[in-house]
Amino acid sequence: MSAMSHYLESGIIGHLFKEITFSSPTGIYIGLVGNYSSGSLESGSFSQELSGGSYARVSGGPGTAFWAPPATTGQTNNFQEFAFPTATSDWGYVSGVFIADAEGAEANILIYGQLTTAKNVTTGDTFSFASGDLDIFFK
Image (cartoon, rainbow, N blue to C red):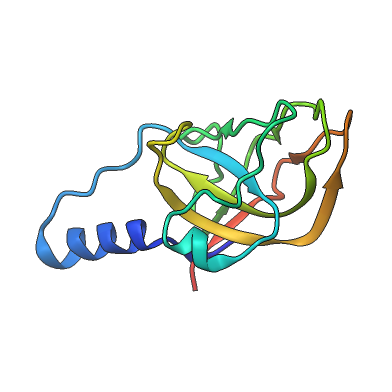
């Protein structure tokens, strides 16, 4: 996953070049999307996020307990498994993932990406990212 949202891009540019404070998020939440389209995620829209059937974003820190130290190549991955609740109804195909700075509607999307392989989540299924499976990198 390597695409930054407009929100994060603007924050970094403002911080580096305009001396505008851009604080680290106090929370990191991983969310899932169906019908992946980078355009809406880029602009910060949650319109593709899954809903219903006990779906909820999962907490991902921040902190070194959650994420591996950045490599010199500008990447990290998850230290812990990120397990979503068991689906109590069909979620449909999960095709993308995003990381946001809050759990609710007030959140800002930070980064997002498409899954290598979409997964159809039906009633009773689980979805998770095993330790080391959620790669974050910038090119």
